[in-house]
Length: 295
Image 1 (cartoon, helix red, strand yellow):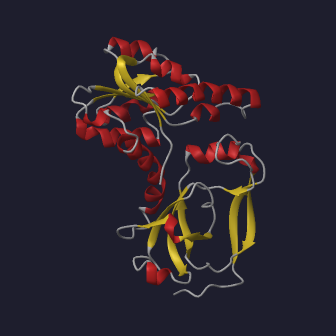
Image 2 (cartoon, one colour):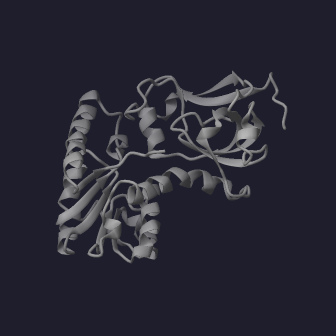
């Protein structure tokens, strides 16, 4: 065991107000020893997700106050175990690398965290693999849960043929593409022109959302059986127009709120009202599914 240094200083990257990247400040704090049931981690790398940007801008619904350390996901290594951890969790040992997805708190050099919130890696990864390992967790968990935990029917539906993924070249988009590949579907993806070659390598038919009428392209192809929309707001109306009469719309994100200037309260309210309309439809109609990450 590495003996905790009571005089060790830790650097955290936190926000004290909502806004652009300039609101992030480095703050030094005293590093405490882990409590019973906790592990002290040295953070090796953190991912940067859309959720982090939404939190920083003050439009993530679960974070009401800005006094937080940012960082949804991270890869860390256990340095110290709190009382009782070694007995109850023999798979957690000093030097073991673990994955963390805790919404906030990971943009720091060290942190203490309850061991129920960490998942040990099957085996430690190399220094070269650490950045990739830290940046795929949230994307792939989001994609996997949308496919398998949201009571969606399309995975088992033999008639499913065409799927549209918005922002297909992004993190969740690429995760969806790779997880859907075994089903031999006809995949379409919206992306800027520079990302089309990448999508084609995965067998995806790219649509340039800047120059093409996405709904028109989809309807000319016979309509989409499923559309994944991580943009939200008014964009959900466009996604609805891409569907077949019995097609299914899955919406899961709020990236419309991270484009342009800091959203005004009025713009935020309008966005939430539009999204809420589809959320309540999702409760009543199997054609619309609202996804939020679960444990």
